[in-house]
Amino acid sequence: LEMNNSHFIENHNSIIKNGVISYKNVELGFEKVGYNATTIGANGLYTTLDDLCQWVKNYHSQTVGSSLVHKMLNSIPKIENGTVDLKLDYGFGQNFEEYRGEKFIWHDGSDAAYKTFIGRFPDHGVSIILLSNLESTDPFKTVCKIADIVLEEKLSKPLPISNEEPYIFLPDAVEKAI
Image 1 (cartoon, rainbow, N blue to C red):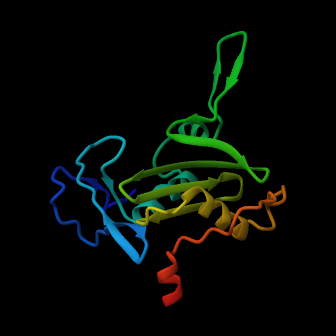
Image 2: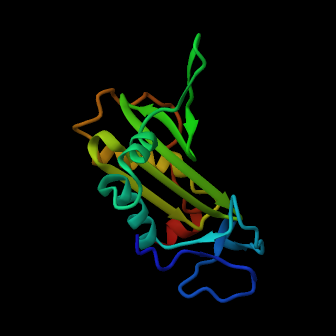
């Protein structure tokens, strides 16, 4: 897939070219959130937006993996035991659900203040990738708001009515400075 900038590190003191620091909101701005894990598995993968785009494009182009594998990756997993078919909402490292009437397949991850979210609407050939280094970011909500804009004409169910405050991820001090 030519994902040349994705790797695991063994030493958290290694310098990562073009790496970012994770932050959290504090009263007068931002503060660093430390990350020093070298765990390989559920976390510890360093990547770039370009590499994640290559990963997501493979769901559409099927460059790597058979058509059967791709069918499985885009279908709700189910268990058939002869008497009951149980549909799952998670499988193959992905969550399967509907958003505003459309199939929505997603995976997220976070550590320290880093947040990652990949959401796919396979019936529309649309994928949304969110990378953040700000602790207060709500990836799921942000990706859904992007989908509302990008897929405005294609989402079959209306926006849910909400009484909650609009989502603002900048601290007051920064917003006033802008």
